[in-house]
Length: 431
Ligand code: ZN
Image (tube, rainbow, N blue to C red; front, side):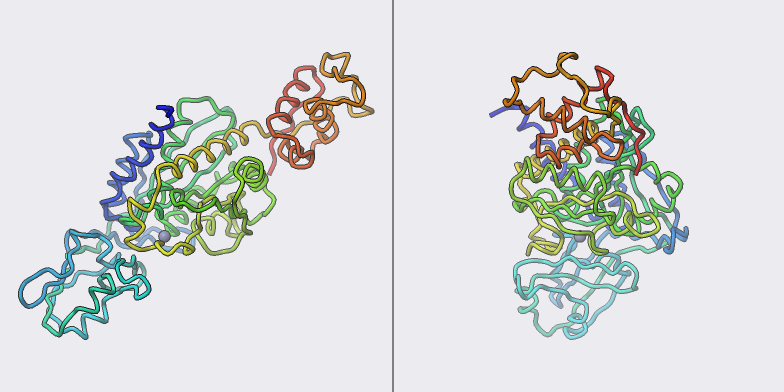
């Protein structure tokens, strides 16, 4: 096997392994630790937004940190231990230190009867509460007893932390790639997106791009809202965008279109899935899911789609301890990385042109571009005719590839040759 292929696979998986033990939430040191590990790979800027800051219709909450948590039975045995899995504690649990009986304890326990071996992932960000999550099998075995419950957490003024890496290109127009970073030990939901985006940014950072790229690592919902609130003036530069998540499972790719529904990003991803991937799903925008909800809220309505493998909530391991290091596959992570890379390649080449000789077909043979014998036209020459005919200023190269059913690469090559003989000129990017 090719070593380079294995290297990328291993690097994507290795970052997931390093991030896996960290207890993340929407704020706190777990997020900072996560961003610092990403910063070893790409030059991330880490931004702190203080508790109490107004961000659009929201307010930055108190920062949550946790050092330990457990439930002990009357013999002093820890029957639930945060040190064994950070999923055992409901995220944003308030501090607790008390002795309670079984029925009181059960009011604060969460389990999954349909998957009795797994620990569920539960949060209570905006409602003051506390709780533990355990396997249903363990819950069934709990006996009447006086339990000691301890949660050593801290909720106090601090900040919300997010990371951003801006990679300038020739143009001020931008491609936004956003991923969420607020889930504790789960691999497909959040770590696969974090690692694929980090490695995509790392791959692009040493290359010259036409577009500028902005990689955003934010806690879900409140983080994206905070980023939007701090960047309200700049978002007009975003011409393409993707929310990246759930990229390591065995399922097919699923593309969720932007709210616009027919943005260039929608056309490019759909085209690549159809022509280069095989089995896939495409779904329309809906106001539920990940941070596309924020980027595509009506006041922004950005050209941002979402590219995952199996969507949120549609695989049994979702939001449980079974979304672990065995659940994500290095080969699938690599395949996801390659598709994102390919999307960037097409974004870079996609362009709208104007035919400078639109009255009748220009004589291509005279310019050395057309050699076919009549009636035996080659794919490349057909591409020249399509590009010339559709380049009236309203169609991009991806539109022409879709309409002509010719490979994007052939359409692109034809356009570059036509530019070189002064038959086409670039039109400014619009959205
Ligand atoms: Zn999630």
